[in-house]
Length: 518
Image (cartoon, rainbow, N blue to C red):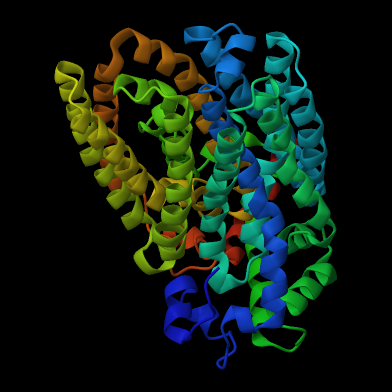
């Protein structure tokens, strides 16, 4: 998860103010006991993304299995879309509840609830005796995983060591592919079983990663920002002393972080509600944040990758790769490729290259590779040239390369950064609601469109990617070089109101209200 590095690297990640409060003789994190302990603890919420990644890859794998298709009556079109879209539908419904629970009772409680539920409903899914039970289990699994997907990236951002926060939050979503790899190779390992256990085993194993998380859950601390917001200042300070200062209660970083957190929360208390979703659009800065959240959420599903992530079988069928072994093998190799790229070319580069530049490079690369992919598929359909088909597979990997350097690591990390503490949970939930709504629509539309017009459907995504590039160029700011609290300046400016200005404004509003009441 990165290293402490020298002062220059620290300034690149969090700016000069915090860099001055860091120990000057810092060792790499893997030689610093308290950071080793902290980063091992962060693996618990990191694996939440792996639990989510398992599902899409598993469904891709199941669709290649004759045993699964036969048991459920060869689902296709709208039925197949329902079997996939019911999962994110459950997520959308749960997000409003989990946001309230996370803000009211902390980040740990919803994660614990989600882990228990995911284990139980995975077993229900694997033991399903009919389509209705299978679909119901998937809906309940989707509902349960929101209790993992919403608080996990938030708690990572709020617990991580300051110079590692950007990398740590970006690494969260790369674990999506860890789960995808697990699912892909489980399916590859069971496809030869000539019974329903060829799909039941991967379905039940969807609960395996939550079991691993549950084993380490006891060690996961509560967010210090949540603790301060609830008046539990000493508990928050003890966390920072133990995990950020290595037990040195006089370290400069302790005072710096506590002062920054307390000041930020005091300022937010003057202008933001802890419950109203309308705060997401109440001010110009928040409207910009929320517009970015909409772009991130919707286009994470409508940038063309969704066609492959849930319907790889249909894509491979259009280029003549129909053998079950070949399809499951390609799925397995693709997930390994994705994880490596997302980790080393994406998440670990966010502080060096920057968030905005990564998004622009990613989207431009996807556009170019999607145009090539579309042209090659058209040529293959016309002349059935085997070389063309192989070239299409290559461009699927190339397109994923560009997707993975930004959209995988930053989908949750970017909204977690751009929203202040009071809005962080609701802002991320809004991003996820938009994303899952886009996924529901795409899961219904994609298989129908693929069946009706085949490769010509790819042209739609070429156009959408061009629009997306323009939106990113116009509206996405750079956030590297700032602490979590300092990112507010990116949207509201240093010339914006300070805490005293906001306090005075709040007092003026109260006086006006009292006069009106009188």
